[in-house]
Length: 426
Image (tube, rainbow, N blue to C red; front, top):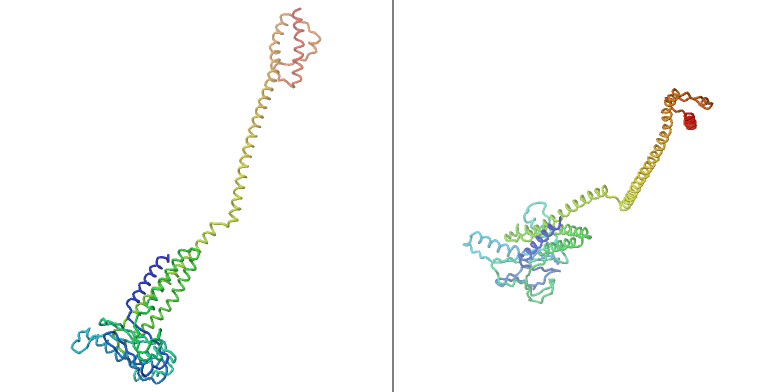
């Protein structure tokens, strides 16, 4: 989510830094470490005109007071007149003897800058009781920075230089010789936004190239952007206060460049946007991670439990297979038993049916023979023998009692049948 916005913001920061670096006005910074020499004679030149600096009337040896007089006299006596003359020409006042020209103005930092602001407030609030007196002997006693800026209005041929007969207590690297000129140039600090943009892009590329360290790269990027936001914001406030100081009383320098405050404002805004986007992406990533963890906790189980589950599944499947095989075997055995039982029952039924048939056949023959015997008895009287008298009478219609009686009767009938035949033959 933050990858493309990071590239865009980094690219915009690089463009902002390039614009600030390329469009900046030539400048030169010197550091005063004490009172200047009486024969210092500092001279500014652009190849077309020159201006000698007024050293002022310092009441102490503090470097801050000597810097104050250089800045105050240059802005009030040179830059103010040149800027207002150029403004009058821009507004069409060409009949008042104004000549368009380039000029220099100066600024400072630290205690010296604060003293300049307080002096401006005291000037604007003349007669007000709450004006604060400045003790110049305590302002930057050991070192004070002075920055000269050149405003080019007439395309000066150059080079833009600072020359001094005596460089005593003026710290410049490398240290110049007497009457040697030091050229103005551009400051690399104007490209600070571009450096920040390159750093953010590199951190984003590192996070994309090394996924395992993505979190650490982005945390470093956010930390860098967050710290630089406050640094750039402080630089923005300083640049804005410097611009307002030079535009207001007592200097009234109209043509003060607003490039530096604009660059710092854009840089601070881009850094703030980057920090906000990173925080939002971190929050969304944390929410998504918590949701995924909850879903994983619900849907997924630990690896050991999954193994146990798989083992249980395999065991249950094997048990089911064994059960199915057992049921099949039981069914087969039951079918075999039923078939054997059915065959046995069929055999037994056949045997019983045969026995019944065998039992029924003699009775039927006896019944069939009784009428014949009656007829024969009616036709021919047969003497009763002792065996006939002893033989019990069994009615033909009665059901057979026990199987033994029937067998005995059948045997007796079979025994008596030849005798009857013999009687009939006789």
